[in-house]
Image (cartoon, rainbow, N blue to C red; front, side, top):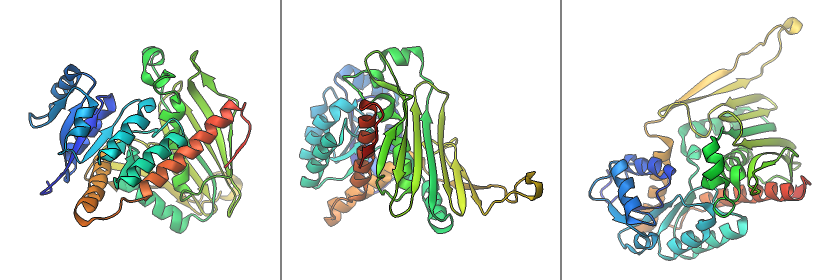
Length: 358
């Protein structure tokens, strides 16, 4: 444990908060200092269910965490519709911000959050855990140094929702998480494709006419294509759905090689993750086989990816707090570009699947 760990407050006792509370405990440079719910009873129940120590302060309102001078950073797993209000307020209270994805309902709302963070000198990061896994850095190294020009990328995230989920979960409620599967699942897909393209925005975004909505108009399933024409032509597709069996695929085809990972968002195992990488494969004579089999590349991690995410945010907070560093612009830029593309997919859907230029 660091001598002066970054003290986190959690605003909202959503299910994902259990995972992040554990991550804060596992990260060597952070501690969970406070949790808050809209009722003290719910906050107490969260603390008891998750075995939190008596040292963790329990609050019955979000404002109490933001007003606590001992809280350095807040993790915010609230419904997307509440993000802009509470995230801006947190930044104005000088709290560094770990914001659950999707970051906002649209880029205009996200810009309000990022402006508040920048003007108050606080670090912003969204809750995309997979970006912090060492496997992700290894994949980027192989893609950048060996694969050649990226030609085609496909990413999908699907999860078969229960009838209860489709009836009552906040992610299918237009007043809470109006983006539905597009915000909850496609965020990862879009982010992964931008990651592969070194965060170069696509030229054209087009939704495919396979959109499924619930009776309230919330997207349950959709597919879209992304196109780049400069400096190198690349085509990508994303698919997200609450109506299909669980999948988290990322496939990248380049001029010299290919990469495929089947669990890019949440690894099959917590401390070891792998992916397939192939270079220079050809068909053998008579096309009865391949000349090269994919190489399985395995990457170990001492900490779970969510703890590595917390550790990185705490490291940045410590640099700001002790050395007067400026907040790292990398993380808000990644979030904003992901939001821009997500907005374009939604706009294309709303226009009847017409192309949208970026």
